[in-house]
Image (cartoon, rainbow, N blue to C red):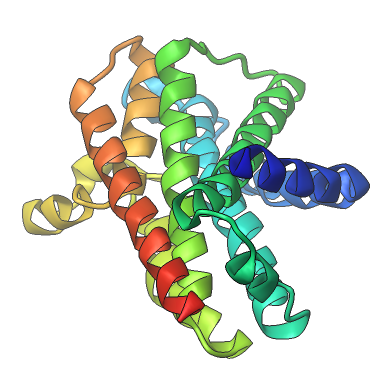
Length: 244
C-alpha cells in the first residue's frame, strides 16, 4: 500500500505538469537527432548501419538515465531542502524500503515514458526501430537503477549546490563516454574496459544490438539488475540515515 500511495502522489504531480514534462523530455533528443543525425549522419555508416539508426538506441539509453535520475533527485531535493515536506514521509508510519521503492518506481516509469516519446520522434524522423521484450526490459532496468541512484543522491546532500557534484562528475561523463554517440570499439582497450563497467554502457550497447542486429547479451541484464539492487539498497540506507 505504501508503494501505491507514493506512486499515486507522483502520478498526480505528473498529470498536472504533463505538458512541461513532455516538452522537457523531447527537447534534448530532438536536438541530438537534428545535430548528430541530420547534421552528421546522412552519409555516415557505423557498425553496418546508418548513423541515425546507430544513435537512436544511445539517445534512448541517455534519456532514460537523465529523465529517471532527475525525476526523482529533483523532487526529493526540493521537498527535502526547500519545502521541508519530505520529513513527513520519514515520521509517518511508512516502511522505508517500500517508501523508497514507490519513489524509485515512479522515476523509472518516467524513464519509460521518455522512451515512448523518443520512439515516436524517431518515426517522425523516418527511422523505425525494432522493439521487443528485451528492449523494454533494458530500458526499465536502466531507468530503475538511475532512479534509485537519484533517490539516494538527493538524500545524501545538504544543499542544492551539492547536486551538481553528481551531475558534473558522474552523469555528464557517462553521457558522452558510454557509447551513446560513438562506437566503443574505437577506444583504447584499457579505457574500453573501464567504460564497460558503467551501467549506461551496457544499456547503450544492448539496445543497439537489439535494434541493429536483433541480438541480445544476457550479461547486460545481470549487470543492470545488479546495479539496480545496489542503488536501491543505497537509497533505503539513506532513508534510514535521514530519518535519524
